Image 1 (tube, rainbow, N blue to C red):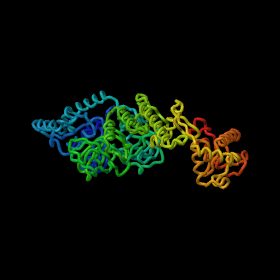
Image 2: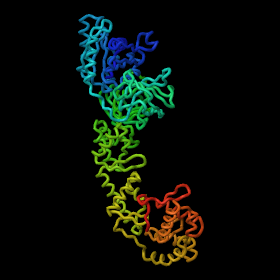
Image 3: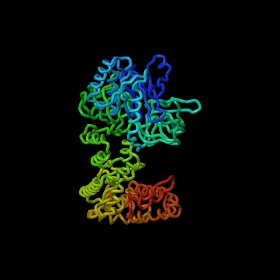
Length: 632
């Protein structure tokens, strides 16, 4: 159990930790000379059950206190009997509340220096201070670090609490907030901090974020003892190896599982104000062990009253490691006053419609410990699907947790690039209906066209729909017989396109010219010269002929009959079977004519998805890949 001290300067925090553990936390020469704590100190009980983070109490060192307060399990609020509660007592208590620390105890120190009457008076002051806070019922232990009075009772209480503490959930990737970085002679680079999530083992590869440098774990110490593994909730020292030096890492950085390297400069969060908070107010944001200047953009109103909670966007002046449900504290622009705190909700916020009711509702659901309501809401409001990798990363879901969530929501999952996109069953069915409706609307708009080009139909269905998802959707509709394909066109099964009578008559006259040299037919201008028909008339006709699938525009103003294209497709298939791929020179030798027309033919087959180019070769796509075009 990690115990964090809190309280005003010179109230005996460091002396109390020394009395409990025998360890002197003030390690800096200046600390010893001045007799005050300036930076974080660390101590561990002999049995390794308790770890202590000793924080400075000076008002100008609250930033150091905050670096140590994040990630502790138990708060030890220290109040001196002679002074009673002081300004930093109150501020540290407010910070603990903002960080969600709801378990702890009060150590009433220096009892050897006051009278019994004063002791009673201070106890009443402490009770009044704690009223209405999460520590309202916290036990109080009068102690003296000088005489040792009460120290044993406090130690026994802490040990008992540690024994009863429910182990932290270790799911998700490993995250450690770095609060110290140093080098040791003969060992090398070491970072220390509290593990926020996951487990780490000697030999693991981690990433320093936001730096983005890969490192290897050469050794571990957990609660200052050699270890082979560490886990969430423990204080860990990690001996790092890799292309990284001490100067590259600073307090506030993280070492994380490589998949969690996602530094952010914007995130959405819920924020609770202590003092009035206004839209676009500059602040110091303390998250993990980091202190980053930022702006608060309120998403609900222009101001936030003390004690009120609202949703907000944070725009940071430099990248920061953060994930959903990370706690943070805000101090004012001059870093002299704690003004608010909150929780991260979404590290992938939208750039538009941030104040839309649907998005605000989604953020409220992200605050829930159960990720399923937020996922189901996202599936409903994102018809183009949910990026599952992003959703899992935002919540730091372990792979098994994520897969269980996908199954529970009965997701239809489509691989998209290196990731996966999820759809709810109802949403997937509705996408199919949208696709069919879009195809029907196009048939009404252009009844003379054989169908709709695949990419145009995708845009008409939903422009943001990933191509892989559209391909799977069309495959399913084609398999069900609800959609049909002719050549490169998609259409409803009952749709038939035909030429108008005048066009059909003109096509019957021109088709023999095209079929006379099927592998290199005359171009539009050549047909016009040969027949005396105006070039624009021929061009318009050929476009309409192509729409109904009787010819294909292999190159600009160069149309091949559907029968010729089918024969050429077979020739390309034969070349691929013989040579492993089709080349322009080989195709030219088979069909005759110049190399240029062979190049145009192969580029056409690449364009429609029958082949794909790899350097100078054109490889036949597998049947399942030939989605753009099928043989007429």
